[in-house]
Image 1 (cartoon, one colour):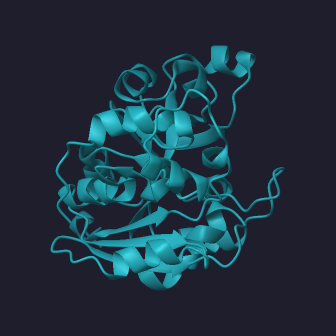
Image 2 (tube, one colour):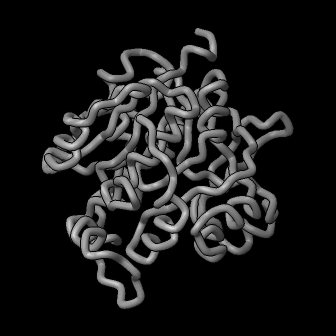
Length: 272
């Protein structure tokens, strides 16, 4: 398969929105934004248009023509909104993850949509720039976007102390993934260096990731996690390449994020 065949993106939007539901006295939000936050629907929080519309528009800019939103059975509002939306650049479908069992299980829910093809996978509460998504689309095989720490902090709404806890990608000299270090300790952070690339759950996968996802066992958090499927690929001898990127990511995890994301996206055009 040539790299130009990668046109599908799977967006994990099944999260429970626990952090978003929590009240914050300092959060600067409109009444409409607050109602969406109360429902835990991070992806649908209005920032001019629903947050997810902005994401989908960027992915269409990057050349993706099909998107699958993995949601829960209770997310009628998301399904109804996108079922009724007229689009010209990107076809949007939904897949149901019956229970919130984790990100690896969410990817499995999109199996019918993927249909054996290469695809990108991203979080539904993050906005990844079009140039990052284009790099993932143009790559071949399994890849993980590896974000430069300084560029990520400078271009995001994510404070440096939060970024400090994000997973680090350990590679060999050729940029092939060797290890993923989640929530690195101070000793690990020092040993790996401040220039170690950061994972923001932005991947490109061949269909063989589904076999790896089916083999995943519950993590310490009790979830079936896509990071463990990636580890399974590495352990099974399937190379995962880390794509170095210098970019920010907008994060819509909690109420304190809403104003900053709105400031960046509210006036941005959306073309689906």
